[in-house]
Length: 223
Picture: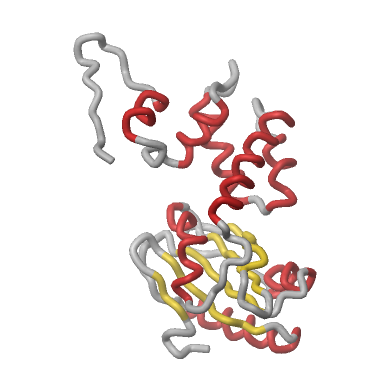
């Protein structure tokens, strides 16, 4: 779709995100701007831009069962708005068909995790699958600093055990943009592999993702 440029030089009026989206299509806004469109307006003490930023950060660091409670903690949200955001995410998830999507190669999981490459800090995520290699869930296990996300096997495998998952894929982003494992990444992968074997869960892969590329431990013969 062609992008349009609005000329406000005469009126002095600046285009808002609704006008730009109507002209350029729904794929035009970034994540925070999509939240602005969903919520419509902010509050006296929390303008819509600030509110959208806080909501986006909360979404990126919350798992499904804690999302609504965490959203309600934001000044200017409340129960109704938290439900609106959660409902929009659930609708998108259903339409995208993430659940029951089959993972037959490392690249198959990348589209479901690509948005984490936009995060300024490391996020460690797990993807659990059933015996048919269909996705059961994706969860944020840990949010760290710009170059480190602290993890423990207990947190990594807790959801996989409760779901009776057959396999697990671990993934984390590298905000620095360098798509290769550090010594810490290699060491932690070995620990997670051993834990998975004890639990009887297949450790399918550990994937590092950046905006431009990905690194698969499986594809590089490191599992």
